[in-house]
Length: 163
Image (cartoon, rainbow, N blue to C red; front, side, top):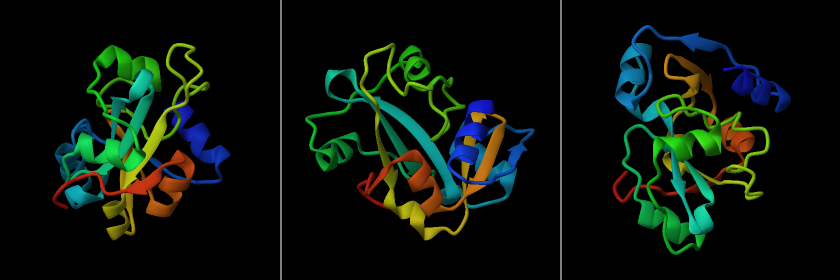
């Protein structure tokens, strides 16, 4: 939570962290806890690209990521699913608490020197307010699409076959 708050503050984004009793480890859980549409939940998923480079995909909770579509849009051969250890090493967060901002200070996997690629689901722009996990499954923050895209360094792409 501290890294997330510091990253947002450094980027000039003021947010309030909200702790939920139910947790926000899934988009549906977060939406229920906050009383918002599941599409407003900005879920952070981690994949591995070529040479094991981390790829952060920030997607709307209403979508399932099409890894082949994302890979093609990035001009890479494929994306691979990763395990919890990879996610923790790449982001510094545990699965269920992965934030789209505040990744490990060096933003690399175990000193590889390779920063992750970041992609944001363009359909998140349909909402004026988004909610993202703040580094812990029970902590979320609200942010606009434009601010989230800017602070995460993500490129906008269509990440699902059917929106």
